Amino acid sequence: MDEPQEIQLLYEARRRLSALGVETRFTARGDALKGELRPRSDESLTHPHNGDSIAGASFTVDAEGVLQLDDPPVLRGLRIEGWDGLESADALVTEVQTALAARAARLAAMCNTLRRLGVDPEIDGERLRATARVELEGTGVVALDGGDGGLVARTVTPAVGNRAPVSLGELPVDPASFADRSALVAFLTARAREALAGRERRPGGPRGPAPASEGAGGARFQGAAESFGVELVAGHLPPVAGEVWLMEVRVEEDDGREVRYRGVNVGGTTFGAPRVLPRAAFESAYEAARDGHRMRVRVLRVEGDSVAYQRVDARGEFVTSPKHAPLIVFLANFAPEAGAY
Image 1 (tube, rainbow, N blue to C red):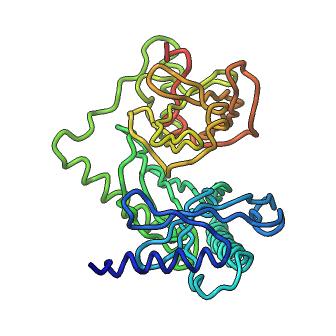
Image 2 (image 1 turned 45 degrees about the vertical axis):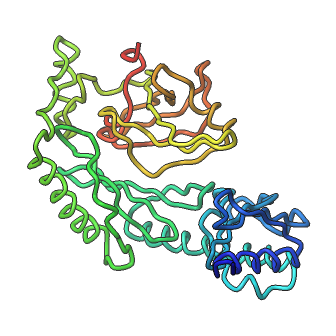
């Protein structure tokens, strides 16, 4: 019996890769090839941000002959066109480096456009993606995420009431189409309010705001919280310099080498794009807790509606550079350590 055309194509792809000096194997289902690409020198394949050498790359070739990079994360998702016309493994490595450089250039252009709009993105160097948060006065904070597929608005965290993030349905955002920050904010505000109104109309929607803590301390900070334009979250007072606060994270995948995870806000809902860390790095960054893992941060200062904080390890030693977040975002994502036991 003749083999299906897809299998014939895979055998041909395997033969061509073998001729380049790249060995492959069939997947368990036999519907794709898996292989490892090993550069011959440390300079052949390098990270575009830090210049570190990339020792190897795993890839998949599907039944249509498309070669797609799987790991490490900085290469994940890259597709190499015309690989079957190359004459050596070195030429294939060069194609991968070219594709990676193009990915980095697209990300840099996106970030430059965001900065022109007054939005300061954070770059995830491991995956070559950008994240940013845009505060919408009186509405909430929108989380943006950008990569090869462009920029999207993922969630809005309401400014008042139930602060569980609400999905914006991967809303496409083209930063180049906005003349200035006010135009971007107007667009996001309209879409965010639509999403928040939709949640309010759904059965079992959010409950009213949690009552503020009572007593002298609660009365003292209630006025401060109102001046910030926020309400106290789950009875928590605003942070005070020197306090340790916690953010929970939820592991989505752990293959023994890398851990894929997301942050969990105080409402128990995951937020933001998934992040990936080598297992050793994850275990040093997030300590095991009763229901998962968590990050510890120490509050450095609270200025107006902004919180400065820095991650600490289990001994209380600082392990990263300081970061800043709007107070409403910090309260939505962190809880005081004193209340976690």
